[in-house]
Image 1: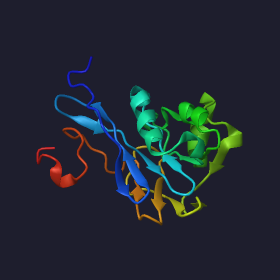
Image 2 (image 1 turned 180 degrees about the vertical axis):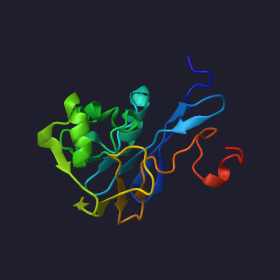
Image 3 (image 1 turned 135 degrees about the vertical axis):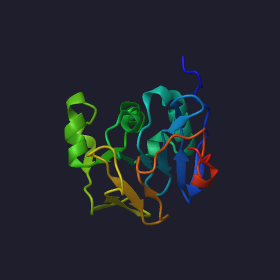
Image 4 (image 1 turned 90 degrees about the horizontal axis):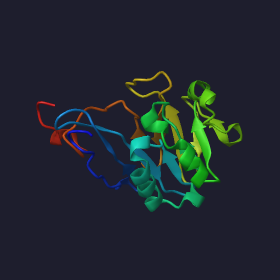
Length: 185
């Protein structure tokens, strides 16, 4: 049992039709690591990353409170760490019309798990864009990354850049602005 239990979190709107789905993992006394996902509830809804298995029930509730699973058309995977692909199977089961969008390297690395149904897969490499009805999502290399499969996603309608883990750091809880971090962190 963790000494500091995982705090409950709530999805929050960060741009028009765009929601952050935050979760936190204990990372020591009074410290947590953000484990975030995003939902774009536009013309063709997109789930961006699939969260960690430890948050499964709460994560699925948060995501599907924003968008009906039957409406989800795309699932973008930024990289293959378990906190980004941990609920992929459950998302694909719940979202029968969804196509997984990822890069070739990510697909090659996790295909041995059988997690990616090839008939529901689309590769998107840096420099390429995906039209999702009311916006184009661009695959880009993030400024920093911890996995060679990591790709960021830029939404040209909202100007949101999903930078995966590029700016991740321990926090004292649900902190969304750098100025709210204690100076010692």
